[in-house]
Image (cartoon, rainbow, N blue to C red; front, side, top):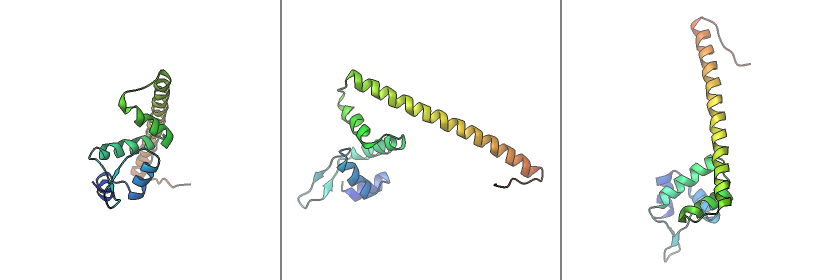
Length: 122
């Protein structure tokens, strides 16, 4: 598939796809006219790249993770993977705590509105 089709299927801009290639996160072949052509599997790969970026991993770390899809890893790399997973778990915990506090604020504000009071932003 061509780059525009991949962009449409993944919701990622053409510019971002070119960046992923520049960072060696995504590979394409070239047509006779020089256009980028991607395998169907590129859709899943782009979605994974987006998830890893959203989790806060930099390109270099993502490149390392993607290189391990072949199943070749070292004990050091496994330790690093575990550390990244732990970091993500801490982020998730922080987000859950933030959501719980927000739920409390929503409940307080809802009760104030129902009682005829008003909550005003400071």
